[in-house]
Image (cartoon, rainbow, N blue to C red; front, side, top):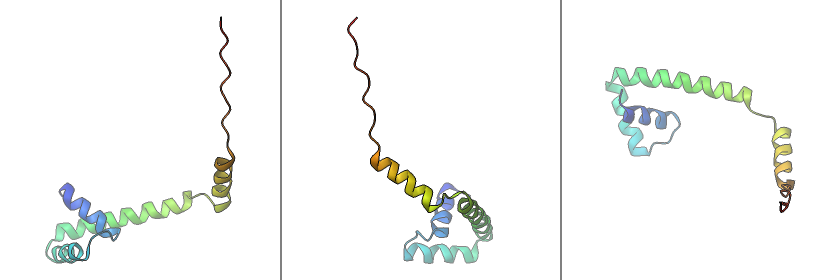
Length: 84
């Protein structure tokens, strides 16, 4: 499978193709069993990655704490150099 085909599959799975590209891709899916198999495999992988990502996602309170910290953070000034 070419890099272009893989790019198209990923864009198809994430609904990033134009209407024209999507129609052309789906027409190719009907006649290309290797492409169908690749779409099925990558779709399964995307689903697994999305599922894992949901488990690793921080809760809203953690995100709020990080944002609050970053808004209020003031870096310390470096110490002045002494002349030797």
